[in-house]
Length: 73
Image (cartoon, rainbow, N blue to C red):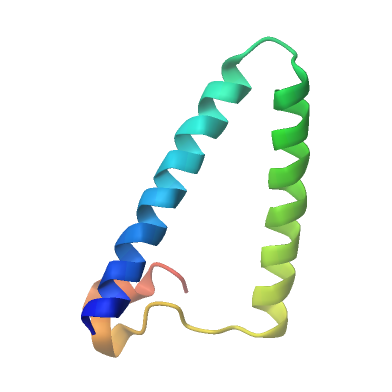
């Protein structure tokens, strides 16, 4: 169980760092980095939504996380 929470902590830090980097790049004037990140996020979001529709896996089960398990529903 410790390994799972270690992975979850690392994953959340990566998401946080990616989010901050994306906000910084989007605040820059029209640059190539802004264009690439915007396209990457759009394609990645579409792929993740498609995967969730095909296989609605519960990432945070309510039995394990209680009310926090409703985040991914």
